[in-house]
Image (cartoon, rainbow, N blue to C red; front, side):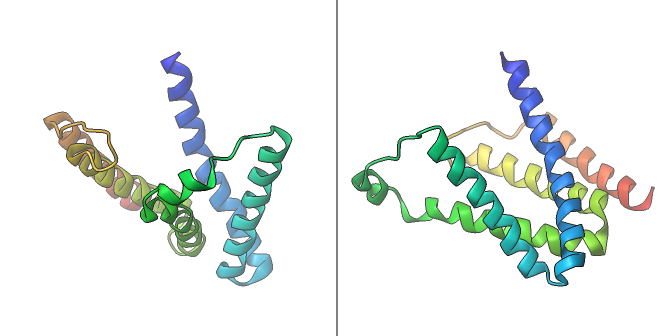
Length: 146
């Protein structure tokens, strides 16, 4: 069962550079990375909106929503910033270098978030995680200069 989750994670990772390439092509049409970001996020919104309607997903009660911490609602904004930043960076750095840097940032922050248990998942930093993170940085250098 866990192997399916690993495969899904790899597929999700593979989707991001494809999305970046498609958004790069769209930016050549719109001539504006902000407008491309708008369309990308809006189409994503419509996709999930129709999925929710078609599959009859249940929404939490209004009380439950208002009781949640304010900062959890920043996730959508962070997603938009992420998409917009990728749209901006890909034409300047290329897809491979952009995503090697993105993965570096993701690993570094993920290790710290886990170590300190910031979002409820506590996994201490280990020598293996430090070595793995350093190898990723070497990979970024290889992607850029190799």
